[in-house]
Structures are given as structure tokens and as C-alpha cells.
Length: 369
Image (cartoon, rainbow, N blue to C red):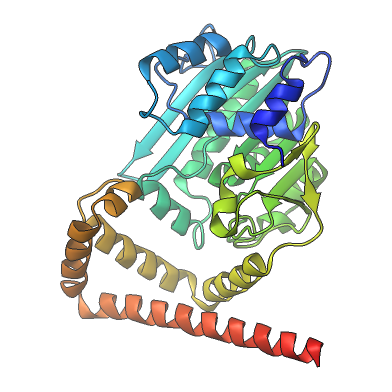
């Protein structure tokens, strides 16, 4: 089975003049904002851009093996050596984590040959702020990162008025790409050639039924792995393609596991039973709670998690015993009404999980009899 790295072996020697932008290119660009490159790439749209190969080599020099995730390190190494990607120019690398308004945001602009431009948005990072903002998306639209993405796209489009626009992201970044493109306004939207949503969630409001979305719908390309539970969260468009992955379950959200065939992904017609079942559970859970109840649940949950005094999810999981003790102490100290919100919400989730599994079991029994 082949992946992004095999794609770079096959097509890394073909320039964009010889082979136009494809979905795999868009996924690669969508992964770049996860890498902290603000120190190597200009942060403004008006500054002189930096070549991708120069940025990659400088970053790798400063970040030896073991200091960054190996997949991202290998990606930069391969991009720096690929004639297709090495000469591309990068600019406006921005990263913002704002505890005051609960925003986690990062973006990067890639200047492509032929007067094209790709705006890439980061998905959820490791910060608790980022995860809490994700949960807010279930009852609040827009969240701060969506508004920031819209501003970023408009700024990029205004700074490069002759360029055609491509927009994309992975995970939450895919949602930000859609939101920004849909709300970019008629002065910019007509220049958008494609929006790439790589396993990004939907919206908590009627965005996908709005005239703005419908105007852009044919240019929005959504890809999700077989066991995806992210892209099918909230109100989402069923106009998507299912990508095969070389791993299972939740791990399929990792785009490095997605399978590639030539200049495109390797597709399948069906999602896995795990993906379908998890979608049903979460969908019923989200729909069962009112927006106010979801807000109360989210605030209570992250109050408990923040008591660990860790700023990241990996910090919590890396100090499991200490974190667990602090979580229990924080939970015990909650206002009884707030604690009850957590108890009832988790009980509801467990009940729905049992109901869905019971229904699926009965359905399977009916089919076999």
C-alpha cells in the first residue's frame, strides 16, 4: 500500500507546470501548518517569501531527530529534495494560541506557479485550548479560529489580487478552510478554484444549507478515511470521498496513513462498522443536548482537565498518575450542580452507546435470519 511518501517518490520530480495541483498535493500543503515554521517563514503577506527547500533545511538543522514527530521530519526532508516542491515559496506563517478568547489557530500561504496560491490552515494541535475550542464548535458558530481564518484568507487574497485561490486544511483546518471560503465575500469567492477539506468536521448551524455554501459547493472537496468520526460530526455535507487507510479506528485520522494511487487517493465505497457506529453515537449525543447544555458540559469538562496544570493533552497523558489525582480533586471540588452536568452527560453518552450497539446487533441478527 502506498502513502504520501511514495507519492513524493513517484511525482516529486514533476513540476506543477508538468502536472497540476492534485488532492495529494493539497493534503501535503494542509499538513505544513502543523510544523512550527514561524521563525523561518515571513509572518506577513507583504514580506519577501522564503523558498520551501531553504525553510525545510534550516528547520531540520535546528530540530534534530527526536525533537519533532518523525513523519513531519521525513516530510520536510522529502519536500526539500523534490523538484516539485523545493522551489515553492512560503509566507505568512502564523501561529496564535489565545487563552483569553480560547483560540488556537495557525496558517501558511504557499505561492504556486501559474499565478496560483494555496492557503493552508492547521487542525487541532496538542493544546487544551485547541481541544476546548473544538468542543465549542458543537454549539457555537463562529468560534474565534473561524473568524481568524476568514480574516487570514481575505488578507492573503487582497495581497495577491492576480492569483487564483486554493484553500485547504486537515481536521479542524478543513472546517476553517470551508468557513473562510464560504464567507470570503463575492470580491474573493469567484477567485477560489477549490477548497480541500481533509477529514474536517461540519458546522453546528445551517451553514451547509446557506446560499453562500451552495454557491461554492461544487468546488468543495471533502475526503475522509473509512473509520472517520471527525468529518461526520455536526451538520455536514454528504458529498465526500472515502479514502482507504493502512491503519484502523481513530488512528485513521492521521493523514500519513491515507493510501495514494498515482496523483489521487485510493478510494473505497464503504465506511467501516466502527466509523458508522461511532458516528451514530456521537451524532445522537450532540443532538440530544441543547446548546446551553453542551456549553455547560464543555466548561465543566475542561475545568477539570485544566486542574492538572498541564497546557497540553500530551502533558496530561504523560503524567497520568499525577494528572488523575488532580482531576479527581477538581471533580470533587466542583459545584454540585456542575458536577451533575458532567455525570448526566457521561451517563447519556454511555446509554446511547449501548442503544446503538443493541440496534446494530438486532439489525445484523435480522439480516442473517
